[in-house]
Amino acid sequence: MKNYILKINCKDRAGIISAVSNFLFKYDFNILESSQFRDIRNNNFFMRVKFESIKHKNNNDIKNIEKKFISVANKFKMNFTFFDTSKKQNILIMVSKFGHCLNSILYQWKTNNLNVNIPCIVSNHDDMQEIVEHYGISYNYMPINKQNKNKQEKTLLFLIKKYKIDLVVLARYMQVLSPDLCKKLKGKIINIHHSFLPSFKGARPYHQAYIKGVKIIGATAHYVTDELDEGQIIEQDVGRVNHTKSLADFVSMGRDIENVVLMRAIKWHIEHRIIINKNSTIIFN
Image (cartoon, rainbow, N blue to C red):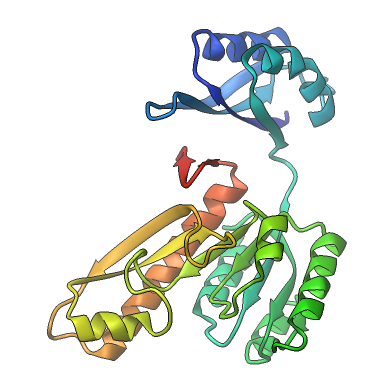
């Protein structure tokens, strides 16, 4: 039996949950998970429902379900999307010289803890090529400079289209993407920022934290927007440090946190647990 996920956002009003539940029951679906949230600041309503076909011979596909749901959606002026959970998503990973996040993702993927396809990896350096090719994944070396940046981003868009990429992951990719590219891929690029945003932005954040004598360090996974490091935050975590820790300790601990935070963000995205709410995110986990 197939499983599906429905994500909804609209203005809140009475009867939404009932209408969705009755629709699923009417067409022989059984609800497996259901989560809702109302943002009291703007009266916006958010909902995620996971459901399955009750009948083994239920031949509903996404397009048919969408057509049937239109009348419900129109009544409540919903923004909605259906997903077939049997379809593996395709992710493209971008990396520079630091390979800890890349290694973590590849290990989780190879051990079947990350249910995605990884058709290719893009990098502006060749440092990670041997590691990637060991996994049998295509490695696209795309060095970036002021003269070729536009051309290389067009190549990136070509790869995204060629491999039908659902999500781009910046696994410590140390290049700023152009505003135009960010807008084209809105809600489909996740970055791991090597500090606890919004503090210590820019270069060498662990050095900044070390000099300031902070007591916690952390990492932030967020969607990429055309404003640097201002995208909607998906997940954050921290670790405690004190005066006995060296700079090397800061970096090592920070990288471990980055691995965990980025993996959570990727999994929540591919499980369709995230809905963007203006400058923030609703996460049903």
